[in-house]
Length: 142
Image 1 (cartoon, rainbow, N blue to C red):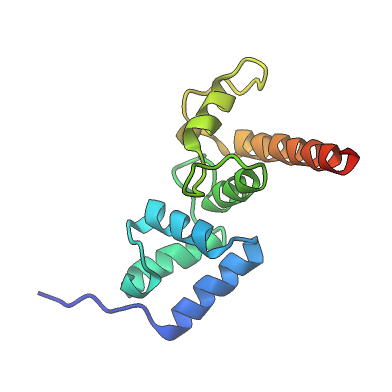
Image 2: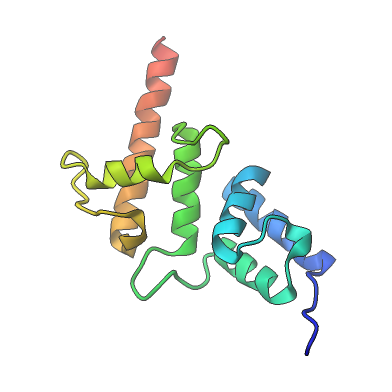
């Protein structure tokens, strides 16, 4: 049986650099990694898993044909964090996201975020950005 090669130091540096470029903190990076490759520690990754993680952070590949890209989903998670749409442990509150996508007012008419297509993911990003701007304006106005 072939032994799985462990992640390299260069790959680890590239992972952190790509996450930093996206504005992801360590918690969000680890959440993304757990969802993507089912690992909780970067040092536990195999070389192949590290490549998958790096590709997703760099926006390469998609979750499925026509579906939202991994880069779009990462950005959505960042916006959710900024909007404080997180669970008690600081992870993206995907149930809240689903409720938003299901609401008539939002207009997405989706049962689950996993059904987002590229276009609807772009629309969601713009909606979340607008919500964030309104939130920040309210905080400034006091």
